[in-house]
Length: 144
Image 1: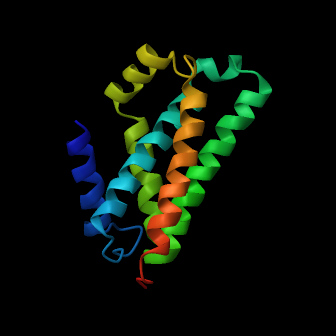
Image 2: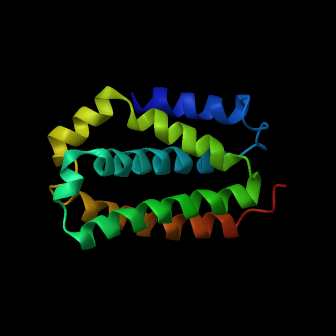
């Protein structure tokens, strides 16, 4: 299933759409990272759109919003390096991923949408992703 979504995401990036011009070629490791960030962002969106979100304490709701913003910031940083139109592709891929019944069901059963340490896991994931992405981008020449 993850490979299928990765292929769809890659196809979206390479094929272009009516809403955005075709992005520049993005290195494969970056595509893998963008796929993972898209999936994480979709999970945060599912949590935020769930009935469980309203039951979260205000500080946890704020954390969820900060994590979503951090992921968006990482994708925007990547877009600035490769192609500004990469961000709209991310947004669309996130929307599509967050609407997948299988992903919604996984979030419901594994995390009760927002529970079972989901936000703590996401906090660690975003921190690790930021470090990996910053290192990777620092090693790449400008692509635009």
